[in-house]
Amino acid sequence: MLTRKRYLPGATVLLVTVLAACSGPASESPDRTAPAGPVPEGLETYYSQQLDWGECAPYATSAYTRQAFSTVPETVECARMTVPLDYSEPAGETVSLGLLRQPAEDGGERLGSAVINPGGPGGSGMSRAAYMTQGEWDGRLAERFDLVGFDPRGVQASEPAVDCFTDKEIDADRNDLDEYDGRPEAVAEAEREAREYGRQCAERTEHGEEMLANLGTRDVARDLDVLRSVLGDEQLTYIGWSYGTRIGYTYAERFPGNVRALVLDGAVDPEQDAMESLVAQYEGFGDTFGQFARWCTGREDCALGNDPAGAVGAYQDLTRPLLDRPVDLPDGRVLSYEDATTGTIAALYDNQSWPMLNRGLTELAQGRGTTLMMLADNYLQRGPNGRYSNMHEALTAVNCVDEPPVTDRERNAEMQRQALDAAEFLDPGLPPSSARGPCAFWPVDHTSEPRLPDVDGVPPPLVISSTGDPATPYEAGVSLAEALGGRLLTFESARHGAFLTAGNDCIDEAGAEYLISGTLPPEGTRCSPA
Image (cartoon, rainbow, N blue to C red):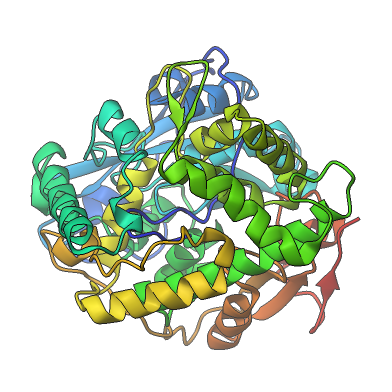
């Protein structure tokens, strides 16, 4: 979901606890004297590099990555790959990407590597792959592919990582209400903070503005082609969720002959700009909240009462008082209005989290906020030690360089009104703010434009879209499948992302068959929850 302060990522929320980090056996990649597949001129050194695979514990940068790496199989290994900071100057500064690999099982007919990205932007592909090795990686796929997750440039274990705020500054920002207030003084303060956001990112991130300028999906797609070659694959097999679909179709446009298979799940609409995406996402969350309300009001213990028509008002009665009176928590912090709505949004990503949301709202009615704060903390990747991953800092930085900035205050205010009309439960009851966000003041130019990708010559991809997806609405998947000449696979469920995440045999079997044999499911295939 989008807010004026930040873009909330389109990645499945993982509710985790902190466990001890682990390590795996060290090994080296097979010796190769030449890169695999085609190599752009001047980049031979990068495409032919050899990776030194070893233990994963040194790559853990937060409580969430330590958790992800803590119980992986012993065969899992990690490495770093070097790429140019600026592809127009390959002899200049470099950056490194963190990689995690689970080799294909012995005895199977290996087809190559399956590279994944979980979305965000800012999500850790290393962590996502680590979780997949613990039960989500389909048995047939494990026999045929190495599973490889990567942290894109600037993200988490990759170096340097985007760095804009201290942990204390992020905590304080969660209690800042200026983004919700349309009064002139609040708008001025919100824009001052937005300017400061970009300035601090450039000042605190290694390589400064040069790093920010080369952080976008344009460059991630080029990194992905280096990774394809370094892994020894002449063509790429790729699975992307949410923002990861943007990486996938951007790669396909730039390297159409290098694509073997693409699974794109929870599609980002390539034609929407930031404000259009905001409205579409609010519409998605508004619809999903309505589904939650119907589910909840059918229960005797629903915190919103038993009348679906009154659920939005009941929710606002619970959350709006937090604008003036945050709830004190046992750890000394307070649950703010933003924390409560962020926790709600987190639970709406997956209908299996709805009971937890109901519990959190019940607690709020009793003057307590522990569950909603836990949902918000997990969503924002704040560990028990108070440390955050850099997911949200990277998310804003990537979005600001990927998309044209919205500088028109009147358009901003109008789109905010439309968004709140679409998701009335998120309306704080204040005049809509016209404040421009960080991207309007970003210190470097954007490098991409909203448009349909040109993917002539690319094998038809498999596009998966969920009918009740709150973050990347269903129609975006319909449009992307048509634009790419691919096949749409529909999941009839209220969740964000389905393949290898929903535990649905219909979706998983169709995706696995496509990745292994290239066979797409029949036109019009729809899958339902078990």
